[in-house]
Image 1 (tube, rainbow, N blue to C red):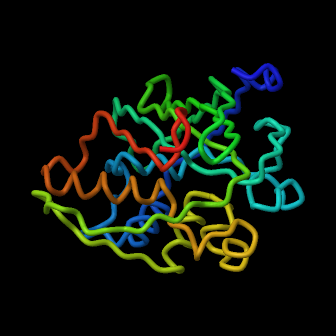
Image 2 (image 1 turned 60 degrees about the vertical axis):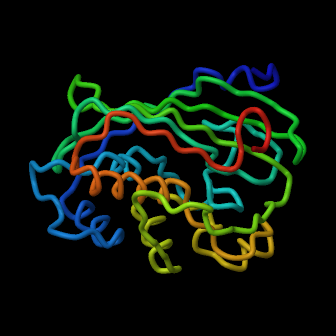
Length: 244
């Protein structure tokens, strides 16, 4: 824990919203899923919860990167770049179209590290999703702040083919629609000049949660357990041991 940000530890926010048939249909088609989207009373896939419980503030309360300005719920960390570093999910009960969901955010840890890329600040956020009094899912989200420019790694073909393989591709329209449905205003996902000129990426950035969603849906299709997912882990190129 970093004493500089102690007053943010344990800070909470609560959001209430209903899973609508319209949003279920929009996300279904944004992800180009087969079959019909879920209708009223039917279960949504587990990581649909990424569309729920996001903060909504007026434009004048957003920072340059598109996220809500730091200093309110999130501490005023001066490092310029914010990224999704990973998350762990546990699912206890399926969420369904029409459910009224209460999402609670709680800052559980703030850690400052020095990695090979320089100073890093990690914030752990526990999100809990309740329908009435029933806990349906939890997300332990890890966010990292850094001043370093992104390190672009060359992608090589895997040495061995996996038992299951699927090729995925995306485009700016899909990234924009996913940003809109998850209310993720981070400009690196839809504003190419900002992504390349300010945050020094070579192009638009695919959301880490979108990659996790694709992988979970792929695993569900292959396993035949389309609506069952008990635990899920996803990690980016950063960890609390420094850059991986």
